[in-house]
Length: 337
Image 1 (tube, one colour):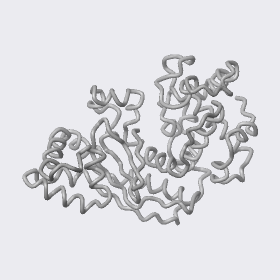
Image 2 (spheres, rainbow, N blue to C red):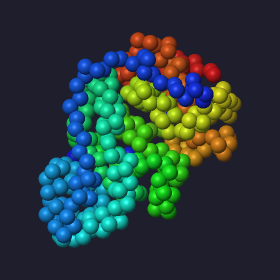
Image 3 (cartoon, rainbow, N blue to C red):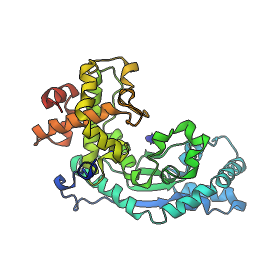
Image 4 (cartoon, rainbow, N blue to C red):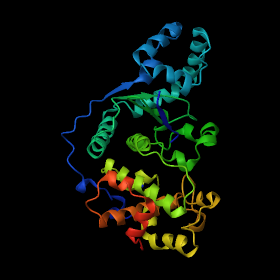
């Protein structure tokens, strides 16, 4: 079984930067998809009859029920039915307050289903042969576990990691050991569609883990951010890149200075991963830019390079963009903020 999992972007003009006005009409693209609230069925089980209830859940959620037990919760497939039931009951008791919070935050999941569906419509428009999920399954899992996953025809959304950045348990030692504050600031409902579509994008265009100069890795990140902005054109940019709105505003205001950090220090052609990791990927800040700066600043620059390239190549399709090598994009963009 194919399983993908993700452990989890100003002024008014800048923070409202969207692509909605340039987006194609996808209203006629049909996406047959339904949402199933697994967490409601799980926490609604009669705890005096758990073994039978768990078997019923597995039958009701084919392909997900067993994965939930053995992958998400970490039960052992060799355990007896009674042992599994006791283990699940312990989880339900410990996470009842998390479930109760999800019932308040996600009393109505329809708006999030609509956002995801819209993203899937754009995905079908740009990539007609891609098999989009047919089921959205919401669930509650361990707070130090996964936030979204995809398997076969399912898109699985962990509500426990989307309850709002101020949810009290996100400040617990359990969560902070896995997800530091600069990551848990994104544990909000507004990130559900971003997390889901990003995960599918990763399936569509897996990132190659090969040694390449920093600038090429920046552009590869930029290609994915640019595509994500086309798949979710109504989402603010700061959400797509995972910054706070004020951080993205500062990045645009200091764009030339940020770029000079790479050019003046001869970083663009560096291939040392110990250096590259300071500018690409999860990080609380960029050391050279100060305490208030975001990390992953190389991806921000890569995104701007791709934007510049696409302005010069207006006829390019998303498939052409993603198949164009990073060095070509960098050279043709002639990015100089």
